[in-house]
Image (cartoon, rainbow, N blue to C red; front, top):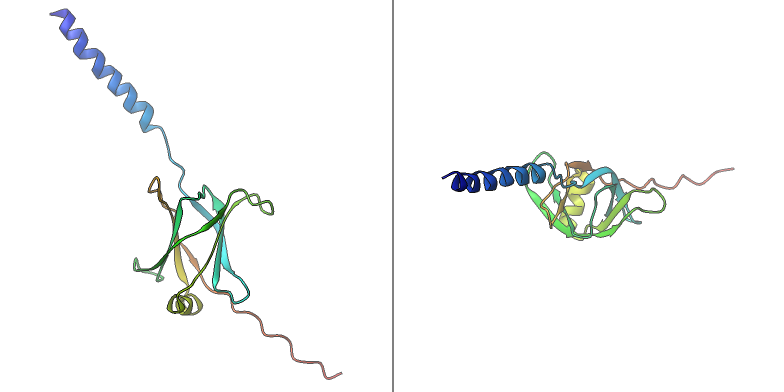
Length: 138
């Protein structure tokens, strides 16, 4: 009888130890540190941060809602030489999304497609190019 009890207890202890070890593993979520508009027409978005991967997708939302407008598979650069941070860039191709980006901005979220981890939302608005200064009269 003792022998059977020992076999029942040992697997239980092993399972609890395994659960404790795996529960301490944390998967790093994508983290957006900065972002803005780019390209000559300012219809591109750049994001810098940590834990970006080639498997990331960026989802664009209408501000103050969870209504998604577009999803982009993005270009990714790990540890950009200029900043030392990860970099994601992409062009907004839909003209209606470009108009919302210019008027009210977009909520941006990065999702790691392999782990399901998500970044916090960031609000970005298209930068309007400054017009050239008027010609000098002098």
